[in-house]
Image 1: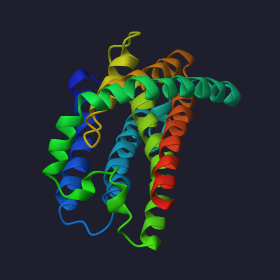
Image 2: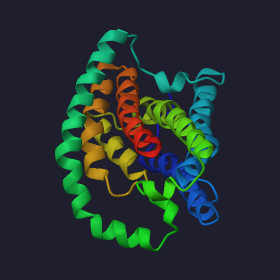
Image 3: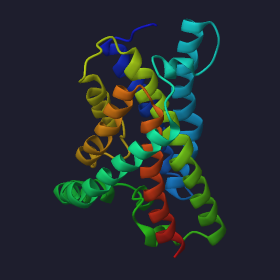
Length: 241
């Protein structure tokens, strides 16, 4: 296994998100479609290929062929039902955190967030549902469908294979703190959602630790998909209601 030092870890994490975020920021100023749809398209064709490409290249170097094997290094085949149960329990904990921690964090950053969004075109605020509803119904349907596929499946599966699979197993310093450290970096890499780091870290750290201890990345994949499914359903209901 080719180990990753701290510099390599940071570069692998932040280069993909810088490419995505800069592209989104520039194109967002000329956007004639919902910005959240633009972001999902860029995520599909910029972020995802880079992260999966890193895994494929690592697998080629380590095992002699392009595959996702490096994302499953050190993993043990566990029960799907056990992974699902753990994921649902952790999802319930994340729900409690969203009710108590997220509102406090949102309140703390309300002023900064508002000031930043005031300097950007209106579409950068994904919670501005009144603006989103100015688009045609067919375009909103396409947006919701694409957002659902990307946010519930493509995005979280890719990120978990990359962060909790490949990066966590290949980092040179393997300690009980490793999953938490990579979770912090995972949260910070969300440049497009910069004001929810405390909630994101507290919500994802238990799932990262469970996946690490159980040697089963499926736990964090199921958990991440569940969290994103919940937020996606809320978004779609708000837009199409």
